[in-house]
Image 1 (cartoon, rainbow, N blue to C red):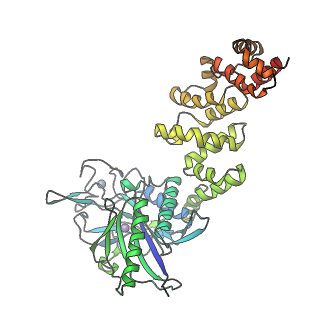
Image 2 (cartoon, rainbow, N blue to C red):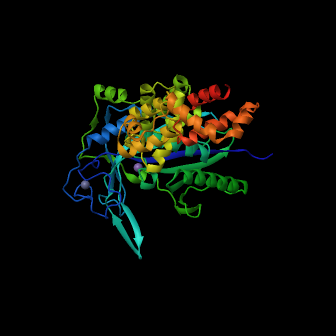
Image 3 (spheres, rainbow, N blue to C red):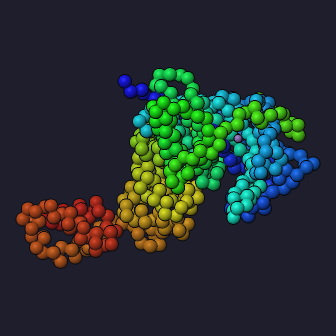
Length: 479
Ligand code: ZN
Ligand code: MN
């Protein structure tokens, strides 16, 4: 009988908090694209005789993230020194949290495309400082300390994911959550969200944890999906061939889609952790913890389910409209201001507003076209004052000019012609140009009605009120 294997995956993520300044000094936290070593000071570059000062914003954001992960916020947490030598670490130690971190426990529910949910528990959630970066150029190793002291939350899951697919979905939902609660830009390409994966295999049904390998340097969700899938296949093939899986670190090469062996792993004991003597314990009062927990917004999945129940949206629409918080807010505000059905608002957003956002590269909150203007446009179309095509064109005109939709309609004469005399004269002109069609209609070919409506539309540049035109045509032709 063929052995069935289960893949066991745990993820270690590093999340860059979007604070103004670094975690222990007043250097800017985000120096993406800056010249090397231009965003540093004596504190973050590890000069002797300086003292770290804890950034309160980093603590608040880490605590909010802990709350969003359903973790317990620790009322007293500590910083520790993790000692190791590496050229990108000028102090010779990293300030991190070891045994009393800011968050305890917690989980993230991962919603798979087949409708199943997997609850992934959090093993570790703590604050720490980032290290610098090194690179090799022309045979020399160069070091850039700009990233030293950038505030990070390290979050490690229990080994509760079981495929590359599930790991990718975990990261997708985590990234959405981080942006949703506003603690990180979570841009993987810029290193705001970094992920390493521990991968092992076991016989299906077994609960043992076998020797794992660690995959590093995956900087996209697609890389995570591919690298884990590939490594699990390699381990299965090795075991099937009678070999053992050895513990080592693998480097993912996105260009070739392959894994390369890097080095064997050091263990935790090597780091000789001890309490950071230059920092006080981090204390959060009961009131502060309660305030942080109650400031948590409705989370993405809950909001999606509410959109389906409250506005009768399809799961597909609700999923897209809750992909970002600003988009979800935009939708609900438009629904509130418009007299149209929520489904109608959803259609406008899904078809037209998202296209506009995409064309302009703007998020919902960056648009000049606010929910009040979108609601006005939808209502103008729904009440027959302008045609749907005019409404769609108005989105861009309002966005570009910043003017009110009704103002543009008046100024550019975009309103539908509903005036009876005006419509009758247009209809008369169409009928006199088409005697044979009129004769055919009168001989019983009433399907020509649509063609006549189309001709009136063409003459009026699409501004004839289609409903009224139809009624008048029938009245005149049937006489
Ligand atoms: Zn600094
Ligand atoms: Mn770390």
